Image 1 (cartoon, rainbow, N blue to C red):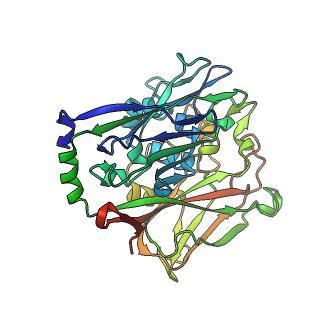
Image 2 (cartoon, rainbow, N blue to C red):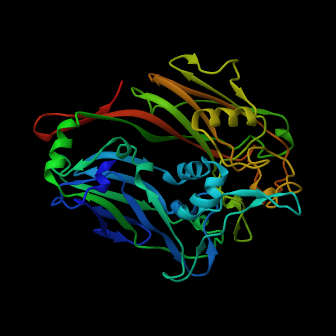
Length: 418
């Protein structure tokens, strides 16, 4: 926007009004300013540890935040709950070269792969971002808040005459697997908010007159459980199909656009071996054997055939079609393979990026998920993990259309768009 070249726009750095280590940070925006531009950035998002280690290679330092919320007084303008798993998907939802050269440094992840010229194996190319013992030595992340508050991506400005009490609340959740060393005791850094402020009231008044309505896609979270198989990976589970029909009520009476499902291992200790996180750890999305996925929207199947999407590569194709490029590697969405001859990291990263995603684009009165996976007699070669028979948690992230409509005297109403 041309506003950025205006001499009346300046950058302001805001300390949290409330900060509790390992718990929460609250940023209060000053009502004395005329307006804030939407390109807000959260900086110094990270932690120090009792020992040196690396951040989680999928989510990086962004795994520290469980939820982001943008308020105007008591009114919730935008929010992202269970942000850690969704951020893991978004981090790999980029071209490999972008992760390798840019994004892995901004979010402190370890994504970005290349082919080793000597071994011809796929290996990580990005530089590890260090979680260190002192403030001066530890690395920290940078986040554009338009990625977690999509309302900001659709607004030209936030006028303080309309939004009179703006504040941003981030809730920390310090899990041991944020570090690749689970014995490392973590303490969050005090983050800093960077905002661009528009100080010319005449420009702000002109923009206010043009702002009649704003529409955006809010990402809302719901979840379901895939229970442990009857025999917990014993001989009786061999080739036995486990089927589920789940009704999700979180999207009823809303227009649902894209939906993503992340499959978390319920017992996160199964991603640890000797205190070391295996691959992407608990933040990965587990691959299972011969999974099938069908969506019934308002009584009608979305995908062809009664079984719907079958096979891991078919699911990957739907994710790429709905969400775009993904950073991947051989075996990232497969189950029960030995990839050590083609991927340097080998079995620890096998089947850890198996997402389910699709475009729906309908108003929801009833949403049912039909899901199945096939059991195997599994000795648990990966630290006891048997993802095709273990209990999993399906985290659903659905884009629902919302609208902010301006009324008289600077009042506004936020509602779900039909």
